[in-house]
Image 1: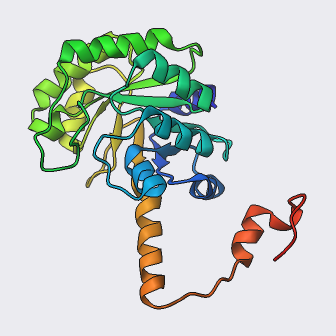
Image 2: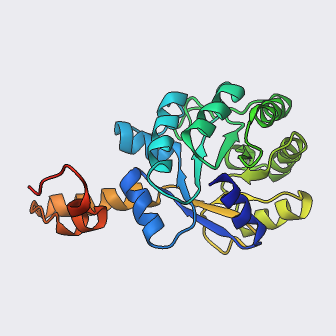
Length: 256
């Protein structure tokens, strides 16, 4: 699926990547015609552990969730590698998991998405980590996106772009400025000649190569369960799910 993601990018059209939370949601995304699936730390923390995403998930947890999702679909999967951990080890683990691409960020991690002070690695150190990740990949089709949180954390677009320029020079295939809107995206495009990955935001994100709808599945699953439980809707009509999963055709299974 790695070569397939490169092909999707080569068409010059924005690739929407709805966020999965597990193998079933990934299969539904694929079944509805989407050509790419995303799994991030936000959904992994919530679906796998029932916790908030504060930058403390282990590499093993992220890779395990990504492997389950990649194994369930035939479309490319993009995975969140957080700050890259040990870059060589992380690249090998995600390649073995079968994902097509990862993104590595310059956020230090701990305390992310909390009221604690948000801290970034130095641009130089982050660029070296991207360089190490690029050098470590065995499959040249495996894509590495370099993410900077400088605009999100400090609202400093110039610093964000300067960082992404360094990461691009270090070999990143895509650059990823977090939480930019249309105006900021246009400026990143003007100054960096690399495909751009973004998360969904209000307004038209014209020119983005990939848009990650990172919380898509987990938020909708949560809302649907909340409504059903609040209404006392405890019936178990399994037929639609069984039909989707091909339950009757699965060897060794008896209908319950």
